Image 1 (tube, rainbow, N blue to C red):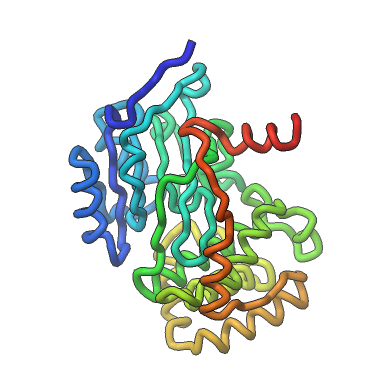
Image 2 (image 1 turned 120 degrees about the vertical axis):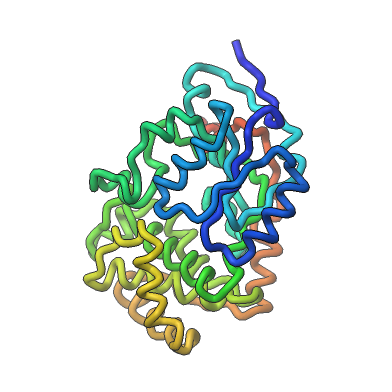
Length: 309
């Protein structure tokens, strides 16, 4: 027996930190979702999510990241809770990334339960295990959903774009949170993550600060796989600010080329930097036939259907 939940009956929490557009986006979100509340400037991903759970008066609530603008129609939709497992699960929908056109969970809308958040220990609160150190997503009740209901804009400043690229350049190298060896890299990392990583490395010159996102992605991959930097430091934004301090005065095009040579030679990653015109062309046609299938359709459900599981 399924239960139907109107998304409009759920609390909505806007979780912002230092995003350059956060005040502008907050005004837009309040006009879109008048009952939304805001949690701002809480350090640490685990702590910020717990603050969001504290701000919600409903057990299940929708979370909007500080650089995300949702489709207003999302709040007129419903969730079909098909089983007790659905009742406990976190739903993470895709967002379309304004820099490179990727559509996956990064920066997307999510729907949490307060119980899940209060019980989790991730990022700065992790016990150090690979699967909780830099991610939420490896919990079996954290579900990537098929549909896309928002756009994420992580390019409000050079620093924000660089940091967004750097974090994905690190995380897309990992095997369920574990750093593979240089020899293991191509066999250990999931093929879809390698696809996403390649797009972060090469696409985005058509938007403001896109060049910095590309540099960040290449730099994050280089430092993780080809240097002695501890990739777990990515869990704290302040650690990345220290790296940015040394990076911001570099010529981004020169550094992109330098990192690219080593990433191509040593990791066999394709380095094919698309100029502004080519980036815009790629984004226009990438997933151009995309169709949403329903708010509670999981990515895995679609994969199983395509592959005949």
